[in-house]
Image 1 (cartoon, protein in one colour):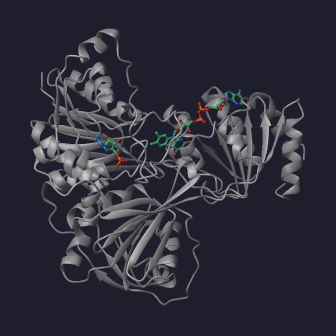
Image 2 (cartoon, chains in turn green, orange):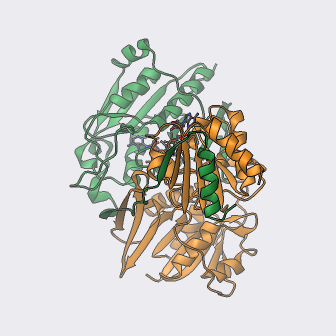
Image 3 (spheres, chains in turn brown, blue):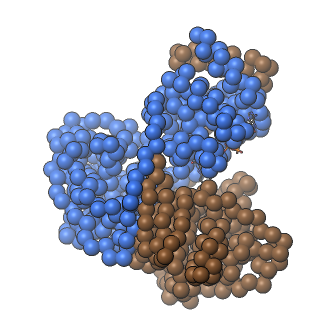
Length: 261
Length: 318
Ligand SMILES: Cc1cc2nc3c(=O)[nH]c(=O)nc-3n(C[C@H](O)[C@H](O)[C@H](O)COP(=O)(O)OP(=O)(O)OC[C@H]3O[C@@H](n4cnc5c(N)ncnc54)[C@H](O)[C@@H]3O)c2cc1C
Ligand SMILES: Nc1ncnc2c1ncn2[C@@H]1O[C@H](COP(=O)(O)O)[C@@H](O)[C@H]1O
């Protein structure tokens, strides 16, 4: 029986089902409503739970940076089975770029300590910069495997199938390491009622950037500023028809008209 | 701006189309250096033709993943005194890893998913589409370079400049320490036939509305009849019906064909950013409220299991 401690980065985001909006004062995505666990990270949480299960010991910890002391998404991941979490929440973090986010998360991971593996998603659903995981690995001086579509651990090594443009690579790496996982790497479980109840009393350590010794965050630390927002040219409205059994003929006529058939 | 680097990607012995697009854009902005993973001798001519005057090559990575290895080779050149004002990356898995590692090494911000760049004096701004491409956000780099930015495929049009082969200089990967411990042990390439998805004039994509994996055959058959390429939404890639290489969208291929046919695809924002640039969009969906109809030139509100077989039959009979 082994011990496997995994830290999962989980982003809490506005519900993607609700239409996105920009905050006119900052031109950043509105994040003031209730936030939920990014579905992209639910795969990492599930993967971590399965790895710990398989090892026969250890636990899954979470780190998240989010505004307004938000814990709803963390609670979802705790309800799935994670043991505890660190939340970095601090008004000064608003406007942080991906690099600052990575530095903050890396510092929180160091504070948690004692990990064998860090898991993140290949990209978040709302920001999708896709750079944060690899930046965390570099800050921590760790090896990393991105785009893992399968992951196994044996004797202190990880073996992953890394998705590529035209297939996949087999990659092996000693622990500790960071892995970013694709959606579909595993099927995330739904939290059980028991899990949801248990999650309420699981510890979440809330810290600020200053607690982690990180200064120059937020707008001040970002090497970028939003300079313009515009609307893309809209496509002209098309013809929408109900299929009455002859819908296919409309397609044929359309293709003929374009001279592609 | 004078010194501009392009992270040049090579596949099957040739510079990728995304690389040639970036070189074409970069040469309008300054003097262009291409940075190649591996051996550049086979591509120095093409890189020069599209605007690079100098090429750095890392040499064989010895099984290391490119992210940390290439970033450290770039950092060594920069520390050695050749510091670019800006480095442009194609938006790809490899390039994203390199630029992420490099951003930490240089302590510089990085902006990904861009489709446009504008340089006015020393000010560099890049534009990225959000909300499925409806809104464009322009961000300006502050502070000093190197500015790091990645660009989505097909953001620029590749055009030869007729330049001579670029001179190649070695930029070896140094000792990576613990960070270089991940090693590739085997490479698996999935076979595909017919035109390439991101180059085909016609793309037929299927989504979850097909109902089951076996029904994807209709999409393949239709694509073949139209001499096009079959594509997919992420939903059916995640479900394992088709390989990732079929995926169209934000995390998949960007396609700009003459005709794009979406069968049983809802039109999620992440799908639309990959196909909105198609000249003509045809959608088949049983839900007349499906977002895909919002960008379709011809929309058929109907069942794919009825429309596709008849369409295939009609085309077979021609
Ligand atoms: C970070 C991130 C990145 C992503 N990247 C991508 C990406 O690159 N590409 C991508 O595609 N998605 C991507 N997605 C996923 C995206 O959000 C959607 O979940 C996905 O595109 C949905 O696929 P779909 O349209 O096939 O399925 P669904 O949304 O389930 O739609 C199925 C459609 O089929 C219709 N339908 C059902 N039965 C029939 C029938 N018999 N006949 C006709 N129509 C029928 C339904 O009305 C529905 O509109 C990403 C998501 C995230 C969070
Ligand atoms: N604020 C955050 N809190 C926790 N994890 C994050 C945060 N931002 C990014 N991540 C992790 O990094 C992944 C990629 O994010 P991104 O680089 O924003 O696309 C996410 O899916 C998370 O796993």
